[in-house]
Length: 147
Image (cartoon, rainbow, N blue to C red):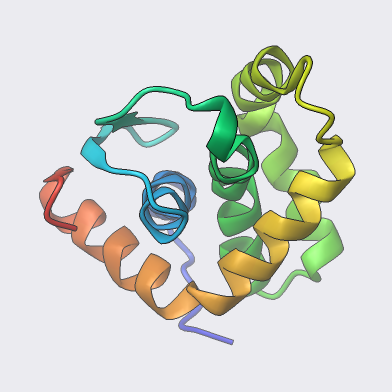
């Protein structure tokens, strides 16, 4: 368990930073390129890929979309919650991601369950890097492709 954050506003920002860092780090880990990651507010951020969806690499793309929520949930779990509670709490910030996932997943044959399992595995494997990138995002507000 990490340092417990008691300032709710900063906690929200760190959850957002971990969410966006999760997208970015897992996109890189699955062979993608990141244009930039930006924190727009305590509750909103954006990760822009530098590449386009490639049907031949659909699992990596779909995993990247779901990895943001998984990373946010794992960060919430460091604050005294179970991972299941973290996933439920993070779900609110993932509605746009889920809609995007469903759009890209059509006709790929890749289920949400499969992509979630892959996101869980990769976020666990790359957690140290996600956590470091999230803290850089918290400090700087924006990172470019040189994560």
